[in-house]
Length: 374
Image (cartoon, rainbow, N blue to C red; front, side):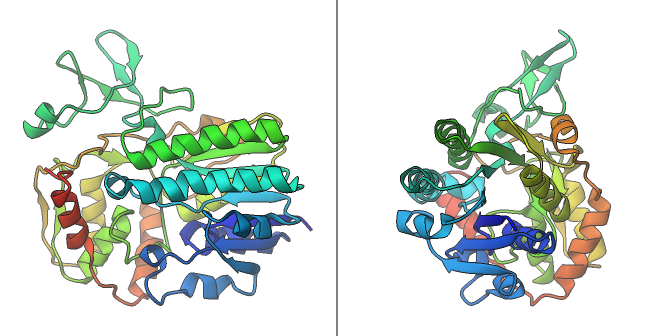
């Protein structure tokens, strides 16, 4: 029996991973502080569901002593614990950096000091490290990796990426693309990758960095207004609140279903990857934000209004979807759920949950106060 530690294991992805690994014969330990932003004030439903399938340690990744306790006798670490949300990270900078960067540093220090027997670390990274990602200039037949869109263009509702006034075509972003992080969260994730890869080589521990795209599905927090547009939109719909879509609604994201992410992460443990690897995990397809809102409205049979405001959020990207060739070749991973199938499962689950208070307006006001929503 192999021992696996999942930091942040009581959360959305971690709890599903716990179930999957338990079914496959792993002994699972979870380190989690049960953050109220993710779990709510009294909601431990995800932990309750898996409490008989794991050893639970309530602890904070910023405390080295908690790491030392948790990593004892572990063969693998899946490091999921993080503060997530690009917008919030732009003003909650010290908290994000403490949890994401300092927390990872504490893990690495604990591994170094205890001379643990950990063989492999799976780091949950993010597509955010790419920023705008990869584009094709059709006129010059070459690839470009644009920087952040200009304030002038966004004010003039020119949302698409241009190069010398020529529109660019967005294409699948592969792992060799240039890295252009456009938020504190994205910078944190890139720092995590660099730290874990470097110290993995130093300590003789294999490292796999999985750059997750936008993960969604049953179990996603419906009370956290800072991350996950499917949960944010669903909570607004269930509270009979209208949806205001930023820009022109045609910005796209790669939405990957939770079961596919869990399968890819499990494969990363099983596969004997000799060299340190960075691998995209996504659906490999793009969906507009406008389509997401309309699909949810349809499946919830709602009468709420969907408006396109033209507002924009500093740090938001226009397009990004994953090239998952490497995941197919190295992990033998192929997503099993398309967006329509995944959304149906998600909506069915949401309908069986208590209607959560809609805190979205509070998050919007915070962005406005910090000058991040225009």
